[in-house]
Each structure stands twice: as C-alpha cells, then as structure tokens.
Image (cartoon, rainbow, N blue to C red):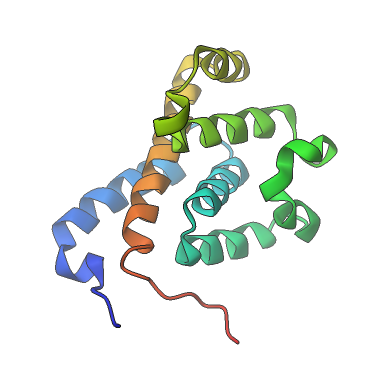
Length: 148
C-alpha cells in the first residue's frame, strides 16, 4: 500500500523539522562524522530503512566499511571507535530507548564526563532529531536508494 509523503502533506511541519536538522548538522560543535554515526545508530535502533540507507551511504564516504558494518555492535569492538564516539553511541542508545532506560543517572554521568555541557545538549538534540525523523520515515515507508 502506498503511504503518504509526509513532507509534502505537511510542508510547514517538514520545514520546522528540517530547521532543527540544519542546526544539528551546520551549527553545533559536534564533528560531522560523529553526527552521522549517531544518526545511523538511532535509525538502526528504530528500524527506519530510509534513514539507515541514507546515513550508511553518508558514512561510507568518509569511514571504513568495517566501522560502518560493525556499528550495531560498537561496544564489542572498542578499537574501531574513539572514546567520544563510544560515549555518544551509549548516550544515543540510552535516549532512544528512554521508555526503558529513563536516561539513568549512570548513563548521564558517563555522557557528561565525555562532553562539555553545550556539546551534551547538542548531542541530545541530535539524537532527538533523528528519533523524530525515524518516527516519520518508518511509518510512511519512505523509499530507499538500495536496489535489488
């Protein structure tokens, strides 16, 4: 069944959400590669095929295929991910699964130790932004570039 193209049906909502996306990708202190790692990991957790496709392709332009392929098990291959990346990925998982984790004090303390206050807020906005996009991309089944 064909589903709605959410950004065409609600262009003002799309404009607002893309404004936050622009802030995250253009106006934060976070490294671009870290942002895309977080985007991809959040999308993997949420099962958004469209976003997984886009962010995998973005990362493969600047990152080894090994690192992209092993992102779902990042905590098992610490040599591939920097301390800051591991902290960001752990916080991304904690915030994405907030209904289960409630953003525990231990997770917050770990994220706070790895990021300055403004960067931690920017990281959390990054995570929230991708969660919002996933909650539109997945239910409306946005297409992927991948071909059979």
